[in-house]
Length: 204
Image 1 (cartoon, rainbow, N blue to C red):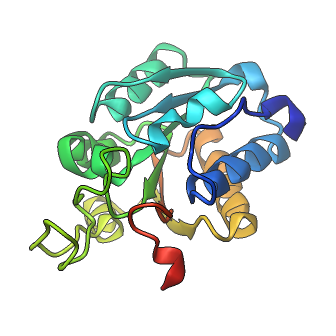
Image 2: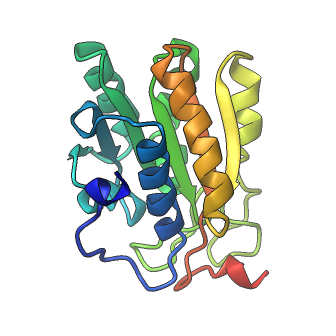
Image 3: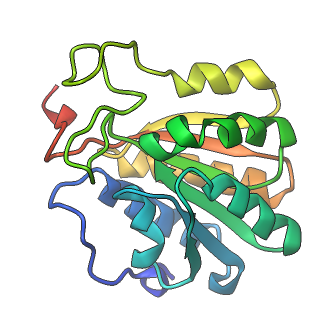
């Protein structure tokens, strides 16, 4: 079953943390026996937003900061689909912040995976909302998405994973997919996904 989700050749840098997310998502969908024609992946902007291009299933590349709005629209129009929105911290926590907070409030049964590399990797290392103080161009404390998520409501699925541990991430993704497919509401996973080119936190 995992082979049926096999991606085309990726354009990510060798060692990119997003590979761990891609592998875990493929395994989780296969382990949960999600029919390929019922899984839709909505990608955001930046490196992580191209994840749907590396999966053989229905997907769409959303506008900057609008992937949650499009993912919710797909789910409302076609409720039997399993909808996964996948993007980066720059997309989700900057221009997409309004949609991010309202997704918890609206509680539509979609899964949102944010690959947080603490930078805009595609624009060659620009500071993002999660960049630490002292990162070039940043003087603000980083945004804590998990804390924000937990402040909105108590019945959503909220988790944090690390792309260097795809086995654990697969397990958590399976739990999130089960939560979604049971119609229990919005699920959010923030994955710490180091950018080996512009912010190699694997070295920390």
